[in-house]
Image 1 (cartoon, one colour):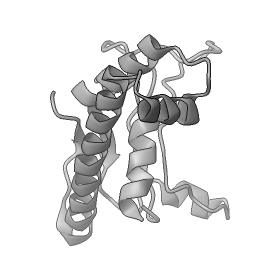
Image 2 (cartoon, rainbow, N blue to C red):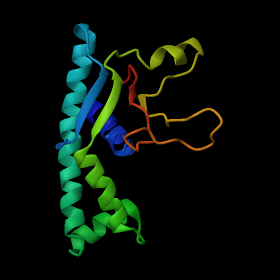
Image 3 (cartoon, rainbow, N blue to C red):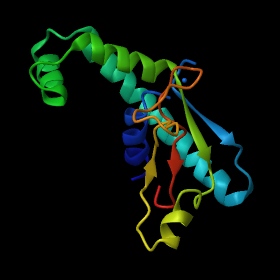
Length: 151
């Protein structure tokens, strides 16, 4: 359950910036609950890296019937392979910034508003007065991953 959730997040957070794929904490884990959560994130990150390597292998040999089927199923019949390879390369070589290992880090604002908190989110880097996300100094348009208690 945990690994599938983070895998989805890591695959979506391609704009975040070490081989292999790593997660890094903006606030270091403290205490038993945060350390336990951090271990789960590390396990999920390792699994995500294994999946990224498998994706890379498929994309590096796209002409076999099995790989053609996998690529078409994942991306449709008119996929831009070079673009997908670029995203996979970025996933393989980047660090995913995570705000905090505190399991309630993301939940509190939602609970106060009587809403169900998401498992995790990666908000865009927005600047007041701008409609579109703005890249940070590393060229990333996404902020850190924020984990909820359900993760």
